Length: 118
Length: 113
Image (cartoon, rainbow over all chains, first blue to last red; front, side, top):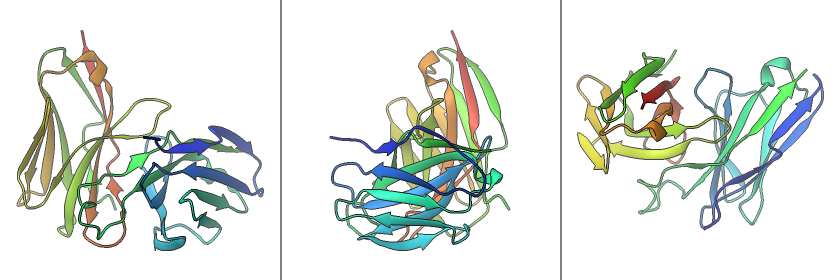
């Protein structure tokens, strides 16, 4: 069974630039969620993708956007980077809510991408 | 406004003893609760969960207790082992189509040999 993999592991960008982070979901999982974890904080929900469409979003501005591909992999794009965007970005995959077997199916996380904005 | 609260930033326990990590929540709509463990430079790893229809769930050394009237849950680790040293996060979600988890700030557990 292949787990959730994220790339790159570390990234340094300059304020105003754009960044793309990538995630491959765990085998058999077709829902992908993205979280931002700032230093000393718990993860904050950015959005979720299911069947290549965004179907849930947290309190993040539109410059945070995403994609999900037919193979269930996903990208997180952040435009016009700000210093406060520096954080660990976590991708998680899961079975979709609503499936009989999904209620007790927890999110499985990758190791994250550490983004530093200077 | 922190809907999931872990009021103890850190906890130190002797190997072999019980570790008790606490979590409080404010939103009565939460119906599913999870505990994750996180090591440095790794993503969170799922430990154990409980739905609101239960008050206890056990998995090996890990037991989660839920007190809905007090909006409180706790994770018990017995016996504690040095490898349990990590940051433990409590998370909660509401029924629906989104697997959106609301997280606490975490409790750093140190198990001393």
